[in-house]
Length: 65
Image: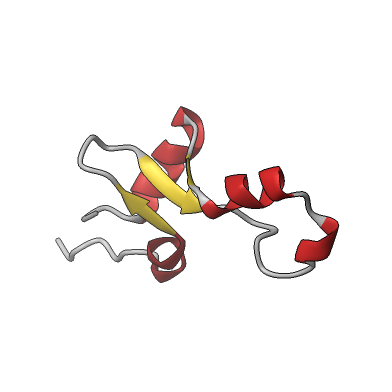
């Protein structure tokens, strides 16, 4: 049996923590900061944790992570 290939697009966008949660970087954090309030900008800087259903899909894409 050949090895399963890792989806490179998923590997660049997500990372798996030691406890098995999937981390991601928030969208809308690249430009037009004058239109966003400081609270929103602070939240966008933090990493997010995917929900259970989405995390399972990403883990299938990244079998060795």
